[in-house]
Length: 242
Image 1 (cartoon, one colour):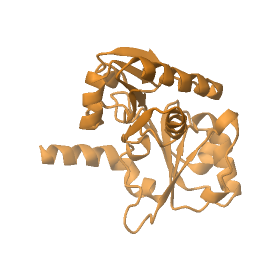
Image 2 (cartoon, rainbow, N blue to C red; image 1 turned 30 degrees about the horizontal axis):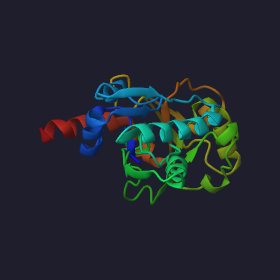
Image 3 (spheres, rainbow, N blue to C red; image 1 turned 180 degrees about the vertical axis):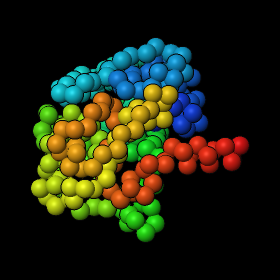
């Protein structure tokens, strides 16, 4: 029986792939990939490509993906399951690993850079944020998350929350987060189409902020301290290093 590699594709920029992920994409006879994997990453695939991407609300498709993985594992010497970001950060990689293991298929995880870490913000900036938490704006089956555990974390990162940003902002204010708290949306991070939108939490709650998916939403004082100049600082640093 073949091995299945659960590979993290990172946030979009193919240069952020690990060397192991890069090699596997070149060598894999078949790659099953998610919808949001960057085009530059997909262009590295040399074998058969299978698009198994889901849109919001298609959680029922996951079982079909499990059996597709099993099918290809029985037909090829090894298989790559390519997932946006990191396979184990809201990627359902854990479910796939358990299913495959239960059917006698070996699984190896190749971590990827999560979009959580691709905003250009220091989420634990010294003296400003002693920690951060990550929450999904959508639960399995389309449910709404319980945000009470996240009401007072210094830095909060919301994934898959763009379509529910007004509800999320209002709920966080109700739970005790400051209405004037600075927030930052980073759309299509690390790609040439990256766009950043800053707004207070109350502006988001009022429906005044226009953003589109995919986007990472960061809330906290790190946005006030660093957010306005994040790209400028990072680009300047890269120039110095070169």
